[in-house]
Length: 406
Image 1 (tube, helix red, strand yellow):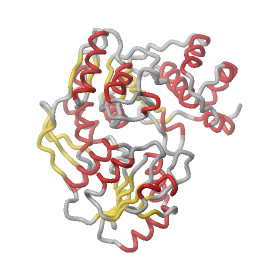
Image 2 (cartoon, rainbow, N blue to C red; image 1 turned 90 degrees about the horizontal axis):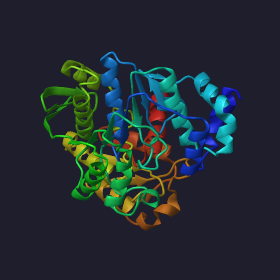
Image 3 (cartoon, rainbow, N blue to C red; image 1 turned 90 degrees about the vertical axis):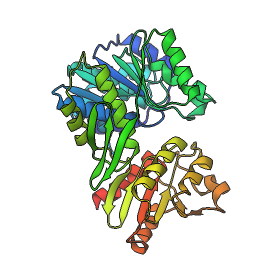
């Protein structure tokens, strides 16, 4: 199979059955011994993973990074020291295991995970940062013992798979915690924290908690904050919530200092060099166009706070599109706190909401199926205002491509 056929081949494999994956791993005698940090959470896990990878890279380590979803190409999910996996490597792993892949009906994400972990092992990275896809306990990435487990946040999401309460969702995410392996948790509500700490106690896992950030300042070209002993930590982001994600990364670095020594100056340099696409990203300065992949109530609440902190006096126009399974009855009222001009739209994705999926909200919010026309009209009508595009990482990535191509 050549690479032209390999990448569509990945997309065709959509049926996730954990039992099949377990049988596949046993059949191919899968083993993985790369020292790795495993990250789960409803929000922020991709950002924390990226911050950690950049810090360790600046410290001179060879670092593997596996994140999801990708925006334009599957190769983006798997990188070593900032270099994406090459097509030839993807082809090699698919061809080597093609018979078993088909026999056990691996899903796309299972196959991508299998490729990533084998690639990091074969390339002999010093440390790998692995982001969960969904949940934790039954996630395709949960097939190794990490050196640190991180759970960033917990909110009610993917209830068909993870449970109908915060406690149940938290228990699923706690599934990445392994026996006698330390765990780091973010700021969680009582229900989530109780679930995770109970699980960790059963696993004899020591639990660390992220501390508060201090002295957050909005700069012309980013944001700065203090955390623990670090002062004036700068980020290449305008989002207040980025300080929280960076603080989790800093705490993780401190926990693992005995194994991976990184001085404070390198921590600050790595954080400054990290770049987060689709996280309150400015893609045009005049008028100011911001895109953000916030896709659940918790993420939207953080976005609303960040926008309010930075742009308190500017009128804001919002273009919103999301997937059908998202709780927009909570999301849209939150966005209404910062804007009285919200346009609902859709985009080319099998899971995207269309007009009929918004029917309960069409009396209060307008709908236009062509998001490109909506954005272009806003650019023309409001050159001095802010245009915010949000609701889905998939939607944000499409809009981002429009502006980047331009």
